[in-house]
Amino acid sequence: MTERDTALPAIDPALRGQLVDDICALLPKVLKREVTGATAATTLMEALGMSSTSGLELILELEERLDVEISVEELGRHDFGTVGSLADYVVQNLIPEA
Image 1 (cartoon, rainbow, N blue to C red):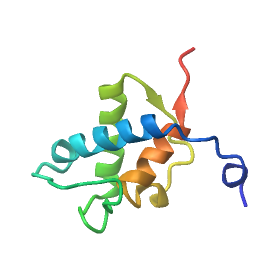
Image 2 (spheres, rainbow, N blue to C red):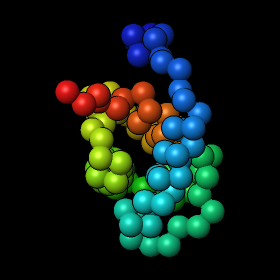
Image 3 (cartoon, rainbow, N blue to C red):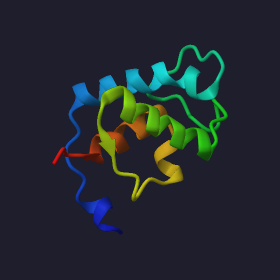
Image 4 (cartoon, rainbow, N blue to C red):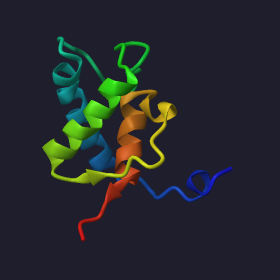
């Protein structure tokens, strides 16, 4: 087990919900096609065909949209499992402003 697995901070449900909404809103732009009905449970790679490149583009778009910085040090394929898992990763990896 890594330190990340054992010391996860509590996730603010309101912030997570907002991130899920923001991710779903950005999917058509990143995937360059219409995406309807996406929810926290929607699988990014399987259901939507997202690639690792489009996944990183999504992170960059989120940073721009939310005017935040997201640490990608530990970002892995499992974090792109669903819209919800990506929202969880983002909540836990926002870099505080200096």
